Image (tube, rainbow, N blue to C red; front, top):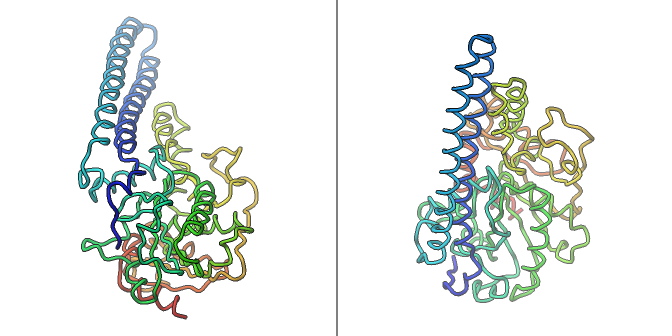
Length: 396
């Protein structure tokens, strides 16, 4: 994997990431405090209401004291958060390479917070050695640039670092050795709408191709989970892109093409909790799920499916929109299950723990399919069996 200097990574947003994490944690703490207060008030109203007028003096004292306590807590959180964000941004600007934000734990935290809430700053970027590469320095960052590109898109709550094992091994370096080419890792905010990320990915590929040191003759896209959906959205949204004829293969690893049951469950829980005053604040907390997470309810790839609609509606309105890919692009869908028997009840019930095999395989699409047993959703990022499957597809 090529490396870059600190100067060539100057476009990185470490200071913004530091400050964004601090701000998000502050907002989360304030949100929890408000949720607790609202639940407290709802329970108190029911209790004092049942007691009747005789409890009025006690209710007045209770409301005054509890109100003061909660206002003090929120003020303290707000003031403390402002200080922490300021200090965090300063630390991000002064940090040496290899500190917390660059560590595996730091990168994991950024990916999770982005995926869950989608509020941290940062545009979609090409990454080398986990650092953003300005496209005007692509030639320096890829000194052995090849005309064939293997472009990798991570999934929800992930960053490009998830493709790499503890010893730095990754599918990209293995493909470049076995098939010749250049591995390009992309990072994006997985909490944004899939269609927005798809549009930005189409634009990014165009810029990559324009800046690439040699002529790009073949583009293979490999997407894990949401990454596969982002790629499909991008290919649908760029029917006239000059780089599109170079795209020959799309490999989707555990992509929830028809949606993910976990998000459907969260949506149902949000609706159910909103039915009662005492649990309504918890419903509001669940509603803070990111746009990207909510898109996974049905695997929505298109802006028309969410624009102007209630993202927390229990029932989906409107008809699904067909995703159209150019006929020259071959799709490959990999599904995995924790169970080692493909059609067993356990396989159909639990899938790979996050995505069901019927969603990952999506029989409605034209694609080559393969199933692997005894494997979890995130194991597909690095397992030898997965790489062997990909290699066989691309050699075919």
